[in-house]
Amino acid sequence: MSISEKSNVSFGTDLLRAFVAVVDASSFTAAASHLNSTQSTVSQKILRLEDLARVRLLDRGPRGIRPTEAGERLLGYARRILMLNDEAAAALSGAARRVTLRLGLPEDFASGQVTPALAAFMRTRPQLKLEVTSGLSRDLYRRYRQGEFDLVLVKQNRNGDRGRMHWPEPLVWLESADGAMTAADPLPLVAFPPDGLYRAEMIDALDRAGRDWQLVYTSSSLAGLQSAIAAGLGIGLLPRRASLPGLREIGLLPTVEDMEIAIHCADSDIPFMGDMIAILAAAVESGKPLPGCGA
Image (cartoon, rainbow, N blue to C red; front, side):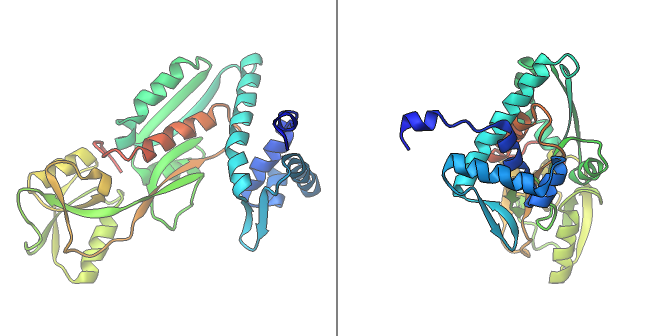
């Protein structure tokens, strides 16, 4: 196809919306229900889109519907086109001029690089009202499932709901850089409260290894745990990104399965949702150390 021929191709938003719905649901039936349409209509729209693109966009296999390599490339453009379309509609509609988006974040991300990025975005989007709540991941995800949030960034076990996007979160044992603690008996532990992440995984791993332990410091603040470990109060199990100067990894303790960071989105059609997801994804993928507060 020549450049001039390509420029004449127009992907209608109804076709792109059907494509995104199928990818997100991994099912034509579920996508049709989401779009208040029929399965045959959605299938016809996908066929029309593939005809326009002149390439197969979806693989239909035993594990559900998955985008092909070409489909993955189109998916990002489709989300951006739909986001701009919906943003324009909201800007021109008096009834939809103000949009509220409810966001839940772990405290370390809320107090880190995410907040300045959100503030900068909000300054150019006066029609957006953003309600941000920070807290522990398990509580945030529970409230998201109850409908209290439109979007959450959480840390979770790898066998949890994969969400819209997800990244591995390696866990490591940390101790003070000034002295070894692994020979202590019982092993002094620094941990989040019972509802926080990593605590149960840490205790289970030590129990399986037959190591005696005792909790010497508990805090819902990641910064508090980092300070306690650096001061030599005990050891802790934390994300590798939480290893700051004054801390060092321990290689003699049981291996613990990685966790993951995930973005969960209730409705991708909400205006500005794509921008919010992009801001959160950039914060996760920056790989910066965690100076923050909670898990």
